[in-house]
Image (cartoon, rainbow, N blue to C red):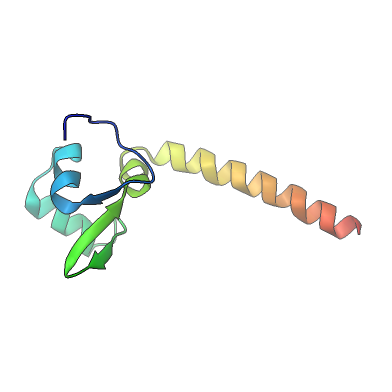
Length: 83
């Protein structure tokens, strides 16, 4: 894995996630166990979506995305209520 850019829609293994975050095996296990990083188990192994890794390292990005989503949602609700 030469390219260290984390892509939101790519699925990563725990080993790849460890390398990207530069954390130990015990740390990735703790993050998974405590639900700090969401993952799906496939064939007994965890798979982590890139956007989960990005959310973990940059919660500010997630906050902006949520704020933007809520603003858009409110516009839709307002439009529907006018009908």
